[in-house]
Length: 300
Ligand code: SF4
Image (tube, rainbow, N blue to C red; front, top):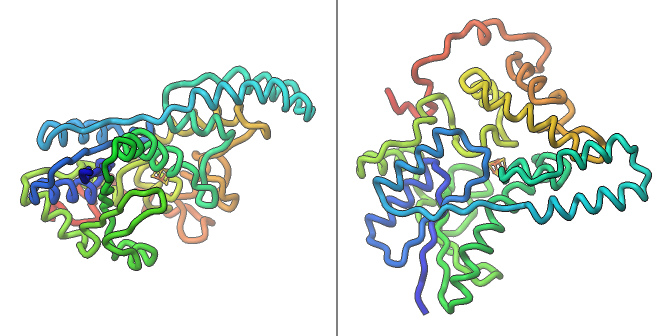
């Protein structure tokens, strides 16, 4: 039995630093995997190509929800009719329920809603399950052991602070967290040491990269995304229209928390306001986009 070391990379700083550490330690049997969820910024896709060119091959996996969408069409045609869902809702669902090949959008059409902080099915469906099914299971079935490297750091959150470096999972693979004790400066130092540039989004005001935006985005982060990358907001607004049609209620919004408004454009408007959301913050609206507002002082 061999140990196969699987490193999942997101295009973010921590997973890149972890890959560099594995290279430094000359770890054998290394598989580097990127799960494309279809909701990343184009610069992250370019960065994945850059890492591959500089560091070595990356296995790209892409979740596929075509079967679930086709099954949902049957449910709409049968169960929704039995439940006397209005015919216009049924017709508009059948109009959009066709797989697009974009995993995030297809997942939301299948579920008839966007994920939320209370229903965070996106991580499991877009990242955990595809990684397990497409990468871990074949390794385990061929009689080898999976060592799953996780690039998380204890000082990121209370939950992470109590995690251990090694953990055995009930599914039969081992989790290894080699940068648990690192801080954010160690992470960027690791990039410097290996002459690898961090994802350029960190130098454009983003504290994190990955889904753009993430359902957990903070108010300031959303404001920053909206003014720098309005096309990402427009894309999500279009998705809201499509997912609404695939929903039995005939409506679905990206941020479901009701105190923040409805569609993403409302939430973006709210993100421009001062505390409490009552007034627009004039200073914020007049602010120029800075040349570097990296939260990590990369250009300082
Ligand atoms: S980054 Fe955010 S939106 Fe994307 S899968 Fe993770 S929790 Fe969901």
